[in-house]
Image (cartoon, rainbow, N blue to C red; front, side, top):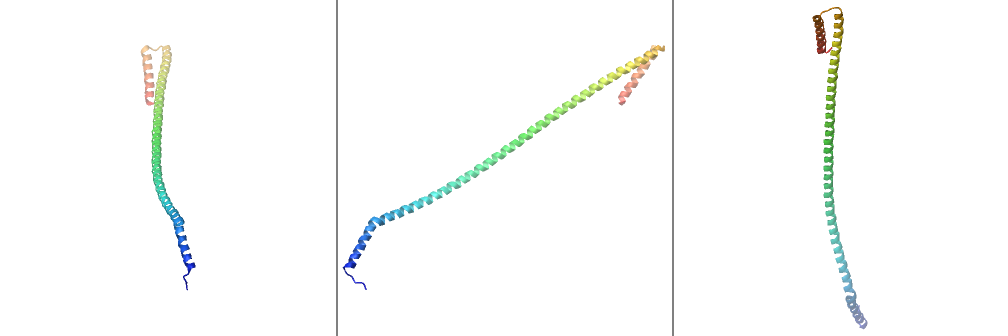
Amino acid sequence: MVTINGTLIFQFINFFILVAILAKFAYKPILKVLEDRKNKIADDLSSAENAREEAEQLKLDYQKQLQTARAEAQAIIDKAVKQADVEGQAHLDAIRQQITREKELAQAQIASEREAAIREMRNEVVNLSMAVAEKLLKKNMDTDMNSKLIAECIEQMDARQANGN
């Protein structure tokens, strides 16, 4: 069993002095360090939460900007397509107008050449008629007969032209 003697009392006194010294010099600083560490961890957690919230907000902002950029890009593409369609249609219209002008010029040239051919043919008919008339005159035909033959010849030529021959 335990006997109480001076050594045991001295050991208890030493123990309590040691606890008092530790409480004064070690316990309070350790508690302060632990409290500081607890506060630092709480601050770090709070900072981490704030950083996570900021990252989430940045992510949302980025997604909004990305959607806006996509919408703008699509609008630019749509505008370019419409402009290309307009320019393409304008080019087609210009080409159609040019083809129409060239067709009209060709038709006018054909009509002019046809008129020239008709005039040339009439002149040729007149010349041939004159040659025939001259030959007939040489055979002593009268003027009425000569005029009648020329008129008949011109009428026959006009009738052939009207029929397309």
